[in-house]
Image (tube, rainbow, N blue to C red; front, side, top):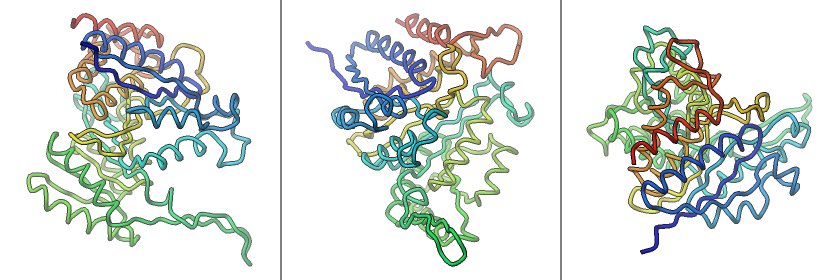
Length: 372
């Protein structure tokens, strides 16, 4: 009998993207052997790398590869080299936002996990972090101020004026709220909804809609926080949070804060989910929470864990390969518990070792293979 084959669009991008993607693909190949499946990788250029070769951050051939795939594994894009281009032609605006819009990737899930063995890497005091924490940020990704119209810079009698429009439809809020509440039912049954209802009309509609959705989930506790207070409470008491539900702009900011207090962006994966394929599966794009880090690109010192964990999310949410995803998650944790540390998470603790990108990848591969 032929193995089940899954087609994955692989977009390494810029900076450290190709380096960490290399390790993620090695991990996927290892779990393919262990679980007797087949992955067909269709690697295409994106971002600055695509601009250099094809003149566009998102070439047609890349978009077509994504359309034919069951999921997208994305690296990172951007860097100083392309900052002189017109804003809409730069890697981030020319690739990331169009991909999100084209595929309707409305739900961004960022699991911010501080492993117990990495608690000392967090910039937060140890008595606050304790033995680590696990918070999931569910961010609405295709609405709000990033996509609202009108959006322009124009001249008026007082000089230049910039306009960005923050707009949300009730249906958009309902859709993302259901993702958050469903996620909470498989965790600790708590949702913290973020808004600015004391100032913004958007916030009023957001809060009212989330409360209506909450009635469908009687076992899930709902609390509301204004975004400024939420930013403070995440520093003060991160272990009290379970699932954070946030509009696009607020989620963008808070999820980076959440990632940083875990110790390093290099440990944090993310998934952007779109079309519901049925059975709890979605078409999605999976990428590290950090950027292209051009200052360390090519040095072999980048942390591949976020890219590898993003691959695990792909297996979980788009392919339904839960056991394979669990195996990757456990292998990363085993490598960390064994003392493997790339520079971003190395604090000089006893029984830890500062390693390269490739060595960290080898440690994770070893943990996977030992489970055969």
